[in-house]
Length: 252
Image (cartoon, rainbow, N blue to C red; front, side):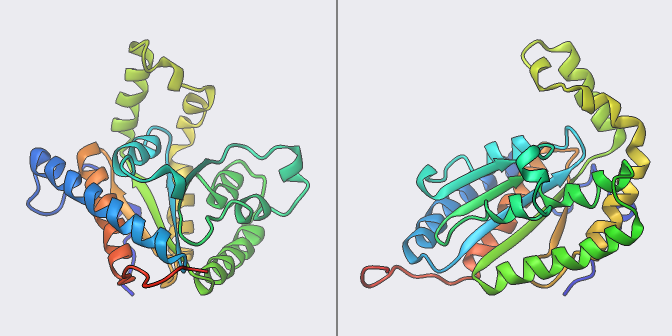
């Protein structure tokens, strides 16, 4: 498996390859068409599910990625979950309970907007867990994701990597534009002073949980067009690798 680079080795504004903005938009249209057909094959076969995990700093574009990459999917076979701070019921269980109960069933594509990685990143940055607990959770997450893999779940994990300068501009845009103001939350501003702590915590988590069965892709996300293209390309490649054909009879 290819070694994962550290975050400081990845240019958040980079767009490797020959694509320009217009070419990327045209390629994204093609990938969405491919994804729609591959989704139908996944749904028809009911042997696998695809779980896409999106992590990143505030304003990194998790919602935008979902909207632009997955807009052509059949809603019948798609589920999107946005994980916030755990509620009372979720806190009464182990931290993976709320995650496992929302893993997509075979035949579907599921998207987690934030996930169990909040429990090894945000929890660590804010001192809810210490280093020993964090390291133990890395092992538990790897085992959990391997279990899902063994049971037909394809895991694709994307870290949307933006620069602090780009985040500042996107936060300012939300403040300036009444149509975007609703996206702004108190935590968007209160978490920004912890930028370096988050970068360090994410880098450690990515390195510790980058596995053959659940690999991370670090997505340069300062340019939305390249972010969308890279995620779409990766999802299409993963589904094509299943080499699914149309069933010849009813699927039980």
